[in-house]
Image 1 (cartoon, rainbow, N blue to C red):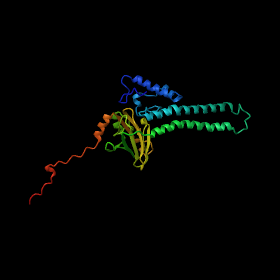
Image 2: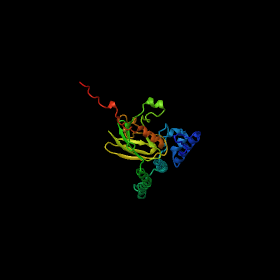
Image 3: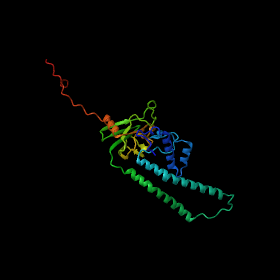
Image 4: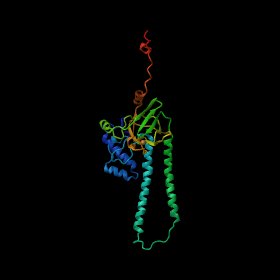
Length: 310
Ligand SMILES: [Cu+2]
């Protein structure tokens, strides 16, 4: 459903209408297995333009952000096709039972109450039933958990350090020292037409279609590094190095936020990740890598002046 996006992350030219409809209905289709929410969304037209859905929340949106990685697609599939149908079924079942009880077993229509208080088959059923449901969910849940932890061979590592209230990004493989990424001011965000409180002054960079290992730690309190489009969220804990990974399958700008209450400016430590082509990434690395120290030239100026003769 996302094939209509161009490399830049926007909808392909001239196909905007088709993109909108594709996105709206394919998402709707994915949810249709039993999703009143999807129905509501389509009916109210709250799904906004496809271009707005890349890597950031949208006003009025009720579905997930579009996936930009295979893991995220699996997460969305698990939610849309396993969890949501089950919880919808359970909710409707309980609602139905409640209505039956209200209608058939009220005082008026049932003047002489029954005197029994136990029913062994029902008690067994309402114990075994939920256990079976949880075991069924666990099959898919554990498979997903395993996949999330089974990191392929990484192309590079980014070390992320959370701090009150900004992030540090360091690229040991590329020898890029840590730089600090802070929230962009409202005026700057407005001037650049980027979302305030999501845009950062110095984004993290990653090449597309490469496995990026993200090592996360905290400097002062617990923060949490989270990028919904990649399906990653991991705590940044002082004194501990946590690890996760992502492999973005499209270029674009993807936003996240610190997801652990970390103090008064918790809402002001956004995460901005630019996923770019390999050549763009290499160019960025070249621009960031520390320049080699200039070889001192044996110029006369470098020679200390001889003391003046007395
Ligand atoms: Cu934080």
